[in-house]
Length: 233
Image (cartoon, rainbow, N blue to C red; front, side, top):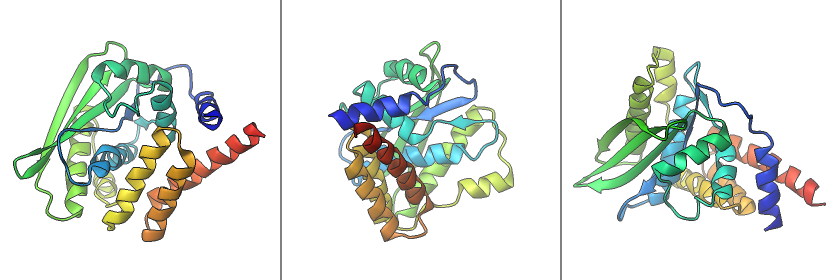
């Protein structure tokens, strides 16, 4: 409990007080009904969307571990549901203008994702996007995610160059098991179980040594954990 509390304090002091008009955060998505590999869609897919949006100039995407600290503080990670009315609280603590929330569910033989952008100031949904994809192989998850990221960027009025599109369309990893472990890592980070989350990020890196996202997040999380240990001592 003490570690979790200090984790919140350590991260939150690094969050700016003034909201930036070009800052957004992508929260974990809610999986509705039975869906195979639910953690991938709840945690991994929105993180991939955030990563793709961060490739666009002029748009600031909140660091995932900062988001984790706020989810803990508001006790939202334990409910499994981040509602549109929670977006204002999340956004204010993150100094963000927009919060992306979403749901994932089966629609016939396809997997459907419905993402909504919430204005932190008004609490209103300013746009929503949907994408459907029949998931036959693991790579289809990234095709679905790429489509969503581009739809969100379009709604934000962002122009995507060919170079940026190429970057967006790069798959994080070819290993389903690595991406699943990466996704599960965030599930534990969100509830303050940092050590367990680190173990899953490490497993993801070991399963695919070219999975740069997992390495970067693990390094960042390890740095936070080292600071926590110093504070506790």
